[in-house]
Length: 97
Image (cartoon, rainbow, N blue to C red):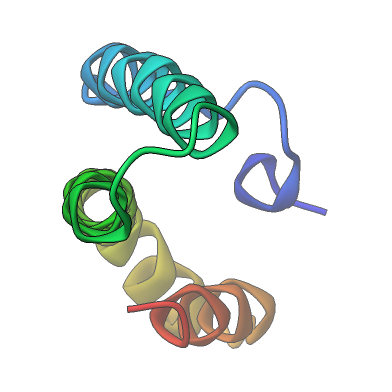
C-alpha cells in the first residue's frame, strides 16, 4: 500500500485552511440547531443551512482539487511502472466532486 492510500501521513498545504473553514461551518451549524430549538422562522433557518451547505461543499471541493493536484504526478508515475492501485484511488476521489 502506498502512502496515498493511508488516511494518515497524507496532509496537503490546504488542509489547515480546510480545517478552519470546517470549524467555522461546525459553529455555524450549532447556531442553526439553536435557531430551530428556539422556533425561529423556517426561511431564516433555510437561509443559514444554505450558507453552511455552500461552505462544506467549498471545503470538499478544495480538498479534492488539492488532492488531485498533488497526486496526479504520482499516479502517472505509478501507471508507467504498471501499477494500477493509485489510478483506482484517484478515480475513487473524483466520484465525490
